[in-house]
Image 1 (cartoon, rainbow, N blue to C red):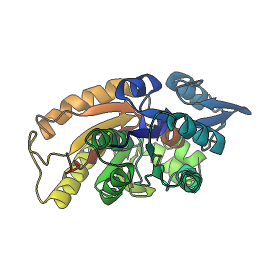
Image 2: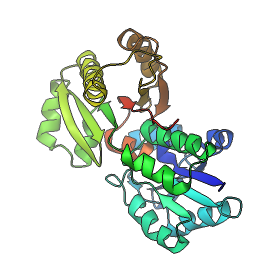
Image 3: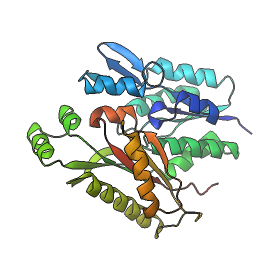
Image 4: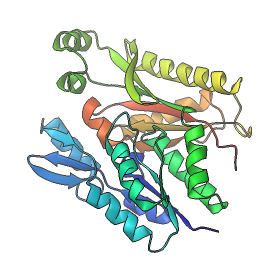
Length: 293
């Protein structure tokens, strides 16, 4: 049986320390600030990132260099027969396409999964891949399973401030000004390749309700019903936030009434998304369980 390694990037929310415990390899994502390059969870902490962001430091996201990707692959392949590499969504970064091109030189030993996930849903893909590898699936089989189920997940994100969407050109200055006056909380969705507008809420309470209802509808549309906790088809639920841990913990307690019995994981939202939406965001996600295990 082939020994299959699982690699993802730090957009999954898996820290370097957690990766070692899980037996997964994590490629750190680079950021450029004031002409200096930093790497998530290596030379850039969450706290440092938000301090710079809130001080209006120009932050540029980029993809890992080809040398850093192939360097990690070469190191891992000394111990493993093959690799399943799960980068962030191709719709949000060029890192997936780069990895796919680089993998062509590895004659099938590196399988790149373009299943369009990020943050806690990307984390779930890495954990699923690890489980499938432990059960004897080959790298190619794992890739096929993850690609087959790539649309069986979505993320809903409530944005607390329009400042960063305006800065990135995703909303006009006039719309941002009106939105701030009316205290509008946009709800964004990531499903497949794109980060899109989903709805506008007049306050946090309404935004939370919109996200809960959207997740319930998605699950019901996908499975034909809304499973109770413990059902073999019960999906994975998770939350993410941007510098908003306390509020996320409080909301998880509220969600216990909406999804009784569910174990809901919480992580900080990927910094690659956070730099475009700013602090104070809350996200709710669902991901279908893999049938193979």
